[in-house]
Image 1 (cartoon, rainbow, N blue to C red):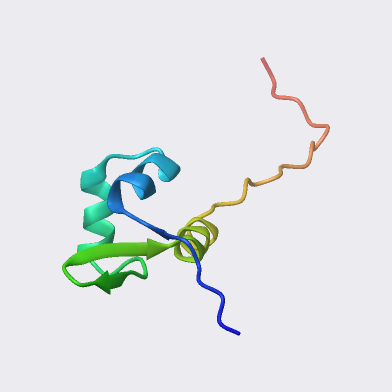
Image 2 (spheres, rainbow, N blue to C red):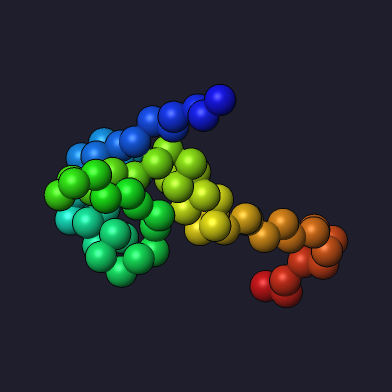
Length: 72
């Protein structure tokens, strides 16, 4: 059995990412995100958005307190 994944249009991707439609189109044009051509329409699978966010997530640097103070 084949499960069909939800395909998003460019506007929906922009809303999910909190960006502009222009940025979403640039991701597609530069092939930085997976997309599907449905006739002349471009659709982006939800998993592609999740993968893009995961690949571009930067983890914070945790600094250990040294206990040393700066001299005034």
